[in-house]
Length: 315
Image 1 (cartoon, helix red, strand yellow):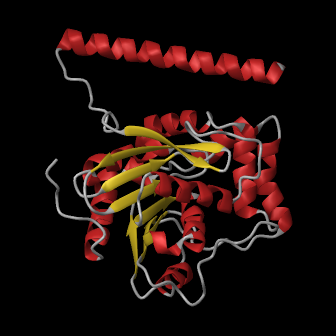
Image 2 (spheres, one colour):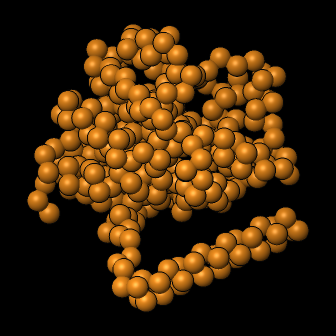
Image 3 (cartoon, one colour):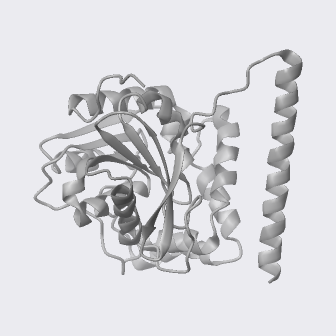
């Protein structure tokens, strides 16, 4: 009860701070005559799909015969793709998913496996009447889209991994426990703050870092720990794509982090005859937020190359 009350108080405080900041911004715009920033998600339609007994929230916007479905990473939410909307909404239909436990989706006490998340993505595609889509997954979203392909390959036009593993890293059980164990303790918020904060190596991105950290900390503890366990526990099934490869484009947009070794890059190229690997230098893990122009240009080039988006569509 005490923990729930404390969490409720923190939520109210965050809402009050956000409301106060919004009021001051509005006053500043009125006084100085500047136009307020345009919300790229303002025109998005909000929907819910049913995955089992759970409601899965997603946003739909954009136009075109092709569909791009964006899957966020661990403890994130659909609007982490906000900077991609203006670049692609006139070239494809866009679906931005809140995975179960995140954003506005239901947050049940359950096992947060990659297959559980994947079933939710398939449910969104069914509800949105998207017969086939290019799946773009950031971080944990990469293993999720791999499991979507395993469950419903006929619905996947291409896989795009953004700074996320297409195969589960080899880890000893004791290393896994050291990594994910803190998320089951009362200090889980401190652990998440430190973990996410370290993903922004560039000092000039401190405001973005703080914003991302605050959004991540809205995720409930049982979801944080459950998703980490679903990814890395040696008891959980791996998400690796078939060793024989897949007959669709497999596209990778990574940062220049040293964990993306030459061996991993070569592995990616074995996954498909239509594999392509690109690096966006000088960015942290949240590359689509930190360097949206470079990211959008690279993603657009890759999608155009494989005819996964259309030309600009008149609205």
